[in-house]
Length: 172
Image (cartoon, rainbow, N blue to C red):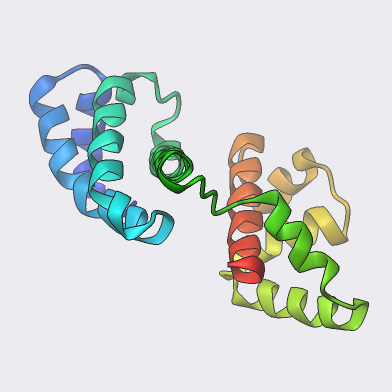
């Protein structure tokens, strides 16, 4: 989410329970939520996903443990709503494991390597780096966090986002 430094006091106040700040936060977040929903939902579900995500945000903003993790948390809320709506409407799941398995079986080793390299190259540098540290250099999450100057939780979050983005590139 693209909350700027000037919006952090609004987020902090909403997290603290200020209803006026919460209303302002919902206004600030709606464009980002809509953008996330357009990427993650079927077109017919975008408006419902935005509304449901805003409701979740309003109800649960106080439960966000680390304000620095807010954008990742919000993205997951939207993604979860899109998946829920898609499964309900058409029995559709954009992260269908069966679909991924069919894609994987249809590739030979050389083609799989080429696809994987392209997927990794498509990632932002910080996301690519965390995948390389974990999956190729086989570093622990604590080692990765120390290497990148992050908390272990932030390193795990970045790795999860990187793997999700790579998976979307490969089978999306």
